[in-house]
Length: 114
Image (cartoon, rainbow, N blue to C red; front, side):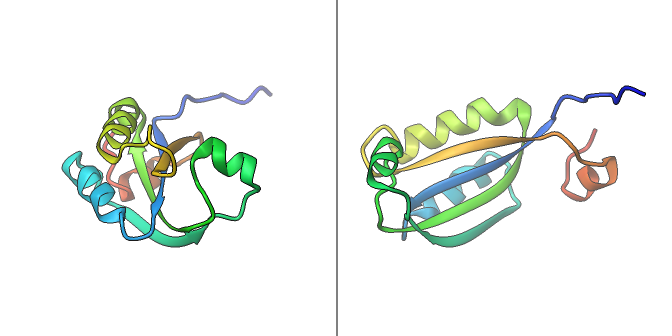
């Protein structure tokens, strides 16, 4: 029996910035109605060529995790990039990963009305 593939409606958002600068990202996301966020501390450990490409040197970082609606992804990423100046070297980055499998009850608990 073939399995039905569904398109993702939510995405996992990760924002990485230099330690002490996460508050601005939190405020931006709250203003965009992304209220459920988790912040963790991190440290860049990748080799220098990859770190240089992504602008994530070996300094201490803060990492924000959130679940966002797919339809809001472009606006959220653009706004974060502009306001946090991601085009400048070593300022941070934001990325999303699709969530392809979530039950309706899980989505309801996360606050995503269908």
